[in-house]
Image 1 (cartoon, rainbow, N blue to C red):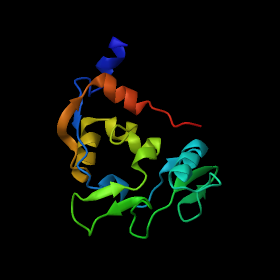
Image 2: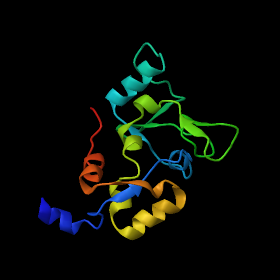
Image 3: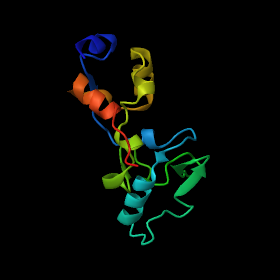
Image 4: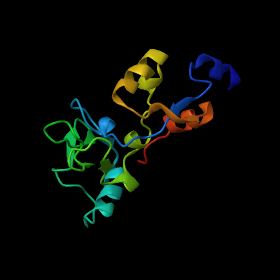
Length: 147
């Protein structure tokens, strides 16, 4: 494993501390992929008895499921408090999908320092706060969603 570490540009670790900007939950249209187990957990958290999310929260994309978005690109579960900067929250934070839990340590952001710094332009928490070690980053990056 030590040999593999040398190949990763972030072997010394990376700083990240969420600033609750909500930027990772909004913007260009996209997908927040969810598994059936995550859908069931969200439904239970929201008090939906049948264990499935209605269409206002969930859409089918091919063979997969994604959370829906508002017209402006905000995730359906992003809560903005009077539009104030830094005052956002996730209505399902306790059960948010793995894709959300692993931000910003996604393969796309970790390809190169340039990709990481490009992501930092939209995320005020990147390069701020405490440093996550290489091992912590890899644990987060490799986390798999429950089936």
